[in-house]
Length: 356
View 1 (tube, one colour):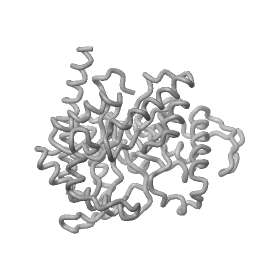
View 2: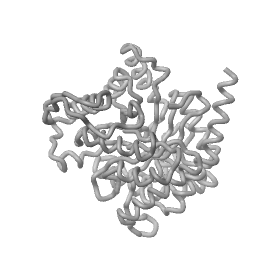
View 3: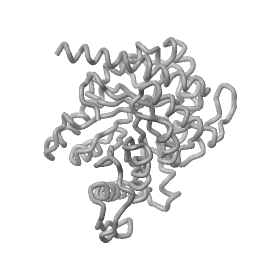
């Protein structure tokens, strides 16, 4: 976990997009997108990024149905980067298998695995695995309880309403890390912030619209809940996940990132009743106080530092890419994030820390 403010963690998150390229019309197969993900993780490790996260989705436009498997493929060819789900849809999964998968990943990576547990913003996994959306909240609460019980003890006795009981049974393998890190992921639900704080778990906020500073009340709720439960809120990591792209210039970054972002946001928007996503909305969101982290290294670093000052975050995920982009462009953005953006952020935070 990060200690000094100057060593804020910076990494990549992805859903393993496999949509048609909006410029060329080319569609990348799921198999090719999975192999590209391993290349991205290896590069992220080489350029010094701290973490790489894969979100779980069960639909044709994403290839990330099994994040732990993809991360395990990268574990043996990386050295220091942390490997996490972003997120695991715990409500529709079995906590025993989730723990076993990520404990296995922890062993393969020698202690670099993490679980980011959430309810998921997409609902495809519920009918796929035979769960009712009527139990949406109850499923998550119950399965999180079981996951944490497995994490805490080699042998578990547990009873709930949506899964057969466990009576003094062992769950293996045990992880290298004790405890195996479990984060709570939230799209901005106050109850999620309070739950994470009460449990003393790190939290990750998905900030994909509006102004990131508007999440400050949720950070306060999280820290207040942690303090009431006897946890030291200053020692609890806080992450954010936002869409973005780093280019040689801000104009280049915006022009490269917009077509795929527009295409995918409009797919999701039609499903959810959002208005069409156009260039004016995109340009507004990539302003200094907006939620899109798109620009040259200096501008993206400036935005991350502002995020740190406004929310006190200790980890930042840049979500690259939102829709399909040329692989070379994605790799270059990852390279710039590690070699240019991260050093600028660390230098500025160290200066601010020294000045206090």
